[in-house]
Image (tube, one colour):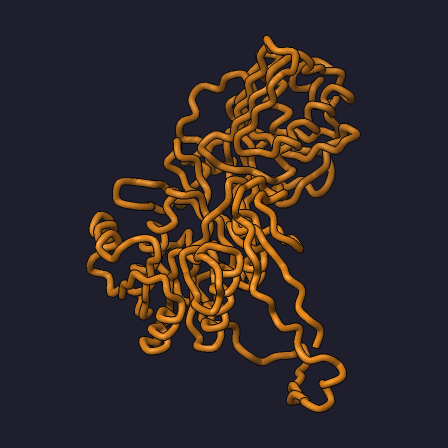
Length: 455
């Protein structure tokens, strides 16, 4: 058998190196690199014939098995993101910034699942049992039949789960788990990988649904090796701005449902409350339209969501103008500014540009391009977009406007909230939505000329 090579990895970002150093070249952190436990590469070809394994039974793609049964939590926003409820023997990873409300959400979910009849165990590695009980009392969950434990030893946790045989186990958090078979500190890459592997394998063998809480790094990624996200069935991110009461639970991976699905919650004194109509909530504080304010009709997963985009363009006192973005991709903003200057002759040189997605929402959909361009032009020209108009469409580097998917759903959501007109790209099927006037445009130059009278 070939000799295993030494491998070192960073506990902060997961970068792998072939030798130890004091500083990680990937993230710049000090004293975070440790040696990984070598893993056997399996039997060599020379010894394979002497020690054969058993033959694996093969099947075809046809199946008559029923889809896995699901258990609804009673939190419709959580069930939506999970793909229609909790699946037995599934492993789910939930990540989010510190203090964003992950433990609150999962304690509420544990209480709801327990009330639905699932035997539920909540294991906290970060708080004492008394602290979790205090939160449960504040949330009004003390009557829920949830079994609680405070432990970090992985061997003891697995033994307890094997004896108690719950249907759902929540581990808060995976970074605090410690396995005595791995010679490194809790939270290291080796420990996180080993704990996630053991818990996921245990869930599959014993038909237990497991939900793991994961910390995130300063750049918003779940801390630890990316292999953890590959092990689990579902990866959810709990997002939100601390200055806003809105929280968004977003699925970035789901083997049992649609990815990029979102659930919206509102942080209150009694915990997290569901938001059944996010569009109305995101637009609730919108007053008289001002220059730079545009309503974007977007799609998050299968749900249409209307959000307000706000832009501010002002003369810059600095040689290098500022470009600040909250809730959108800064590289995408740079592209829109370049297209406006190159294709429409509208320069932003010497101007500071600020863009914000109101309500703490984060948007990644390319269909927001036209709404961003409208907000920037509205702020630059000091001209307001009509209050009853929504905007959506993708902008290409040539300045052409590309049609986007689910136009009808976007228009129906806008019409439901009182909007009467929409600006969208030309092309594709133009749906007929009663009460909505659709203005279709072919390129960005036509948009600038028709809407702002310039170009």
